[in-house]
Length: 215
Figure 1 (spheres, one colour):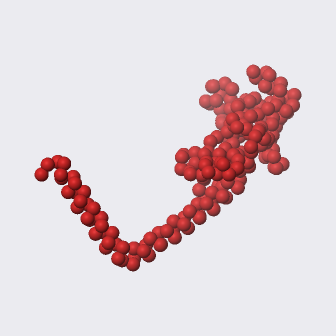
Figure 2 (tube, rainbow, N blue to C red; figure 1 turned 45 degrees about the vertical axis):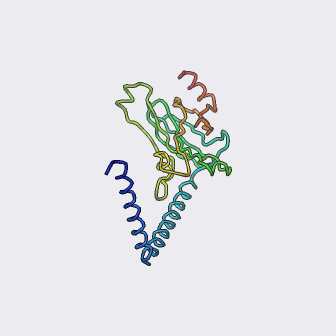
Figure 3 (cartoon, rainbow, N blue to C red; figure 1 turned 120 degrees about the horizontal axis):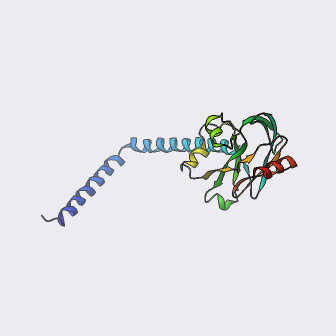
């Protein structure tokens, strides 16, 4: 028997075994019941996932172009210590004590995949965290760091985190971060979300002076 004929014979046997196995299985009623049960469990699982996904997405706000997401104001409370007041677009304000010389605001950004994108679903954002940073590398290594969460805890699975790790067929996920800017007593900044991420702009003289002196 040559090596050309042997694979054909083996393939013939494998085909016979597949047909025989399929005939035996299809004659049994338990197989149909198992398929129905598996399909039902799969549908329940998909329904649970979509419900959790919907609850996660509920905390995001859509945007089609550059829109304001928050204002951030500062008052100095000590050396390299500031109280940052983050005011969201719904009027809710929170205070955070930041250590350092600079601040940064981060957001979670989601973009819908096909076919949802062509259905008109727009990107969305959710404020994620605010943090302080020291200008001097030595202080950055030795002094206390301050980072605060701004997002609400997701219900069940964190679908944004799953999407960022590549485990989502519905959305793409990424961070949007404003550039680090200086903190100064009385400074007020406006943060907007756009296609390139977050942008922070000075809104009063104290903020403009801080940026001018920092640059």
